[in-house]
Length: 476
Image (cartoon, rainbow, N blue to C red; front, side, top):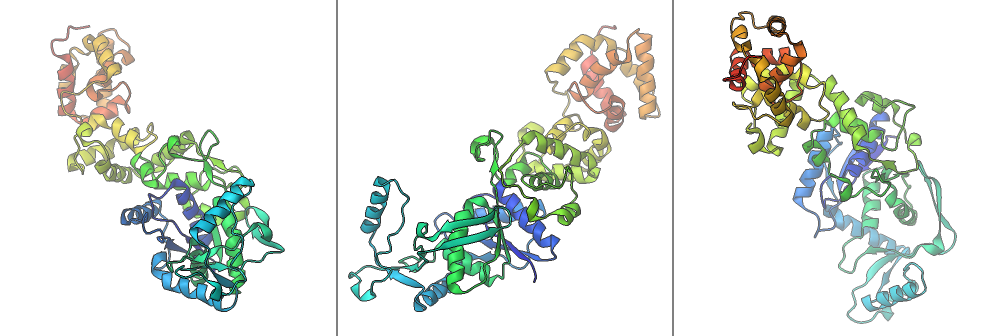
């Protein structure tokens, strides 16, 4: 048997972070077993489905590195097939026309509300002949669900889950306008796409009972099911907008690397001993449904940031510069004055400075900000701490530009020797010179090693920035 999984999002918004994890679990399970993951866009809600949302979902999956097999299947385009299946159930006596009016359904709802029980259709058209149908009412088609006994799902995560059939009513398969319901469409599509494993959020667990009944009515094999707990916020409540960004594209905009987010998501609800860091191949080799917990996982931004920092430190320098450039269109261009691409000279400087830059930053946004000194326009804008350092130490920089001017071999070792000599000559510690020097050259109080900064900036730019801050400075 070839394992076939599917990811089936509704295109009513961006690719939710929970959807990203569901897609990842489906992808990993298929890869682990040499199978296929299919992609189905469940666009039957025509009012809320948008092309922009479909694009966001496809882009989000591609950015996460989750490819799918074959063409994307669009559920709405299969409506004729869904209708055909509903009518076949009708012909076999496993479904029936229901002519209950909206008013009757509302009365059922009101009675259930008064009696404190959930609404269930009372089956009033289950055994009545269509000849009794009221004039002018377009019927729906309902499943003739079993009334007695139990419906059971052997769930790969939740274990055995049992529903009493008396608690499940005859669900609608085909609406009065001839369009299929979600329940029917999902079953037909999964069957026709040869899906062997349905891996999805546990908010679909009740749907599993209803869909199992449809499979059984059709005489089709029920796929194996795995319902994974939802992701909760740090406070234990279901993840929502108030917890922060929800869409995969928002995490991209915040400067996370796809491999970091992928690694973080795989550990949300699934574990493999104490291992935290996984290469993609390690994830594939280790992933199994039995190690998914039954309790909701809590989203932890600090953990994601730390993981992202790890992946940035491991990343190739040129690749990080490219990731920064890819991010430029989404950043505040007025603040950075960078446009949409890096100029060749700046790209070269960024690659040269990257070993020092990536040691501290935890996101690409932080990384670009820490590289401010490379693309800043003169005179540099100093932040508050840098302003204070310059105010305190400007005098200790007096005379340093002239010493540096004489350096012919502009290397980290040679500029360090000059700065050390200067500090000794004025009776100061190295740090008392290096700190205001850093502020003058970067506009910040922290940066990569100051002598590496000087080398990347080059002699001319270093001297120009230093002189901007030491004009008329009295000697220390």
